Length: 177
Image (tube, rainbow, N blue to C red; front, side, top):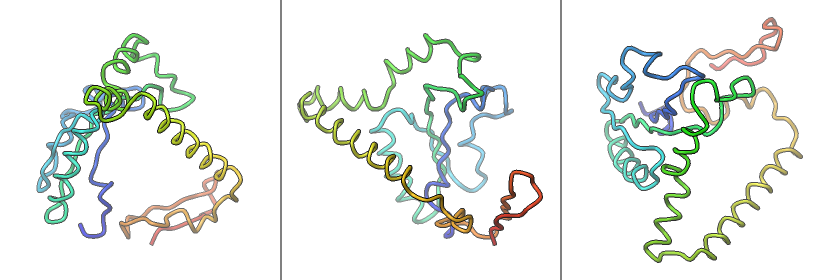
């Protein structure tokens, strides 16, 4: 347990696994109940304050025992270019979730309704964040491609037997020891 990262104890469930709904892909989709010795905690991953409270509890518990958090989230787009995300849900469903459960919008409304921030302050924060993201993207595009030996840098779990092959599946590029 001590070699695992805290992030590895969190499961994010966006309801649709690569085009197959979780209720169709598993006999028991209540994954947070599956741990034999690790307690589970189901959380609305689209509610920032619920996530904060759950993570606070999970951190305190993880330092002693190690929990699993199940965050119910929702993808607004498909998994990839080959998954447009429109074959297993409607545009109205996506739009409805975005209107009711979008975590950023929920926090924005909360901050405004409790006079914690003004619309102008929030616009300023959004502008700063967009600049930070744009700068990070530009830096990433300008940076050289990392060496294959960096593939598993900062991995917390050892001896999990992962191998990485070249595109032809013949040349071994990296072995995680």
